Amino acid sequence: MFFFSSLFDMLEVNATRVDEQRLLIEREFFGREALNVIACEGTERIERPETYKQWQMRNLRAGFRPLPLQEEIMKKARYKVSKSYHRDFLVDKDNRWMLQGWKGRVIFALSAWTS
Image (tube, rainbow, N blue to C red; front, side):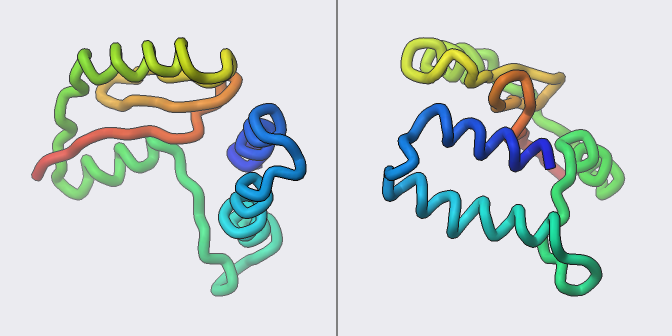
């Protein structure tokens, strides 16, 4: 629930309510996913959001190893976000994960793995 509330808050701050692209994103992407997570159970439920830490454990159990996060990539991402994006966007690092978020809440986490 917090994931979707952060996404919709981010859209509210960064796009007008009449912006066609915003309406499309809300309706076709996030709206359908949110409805599925909130209203559906059992076989009707398609989306099952998990945290990046849950994915990390799943990958480790499957025998994968995380690759190091390149500091140069982190520097470039932080610089771009600080210069070109709203102040509430965040780019952070947790071990070997690049975290992207809004107002302190992680929305996306990126990592690279090898077998």
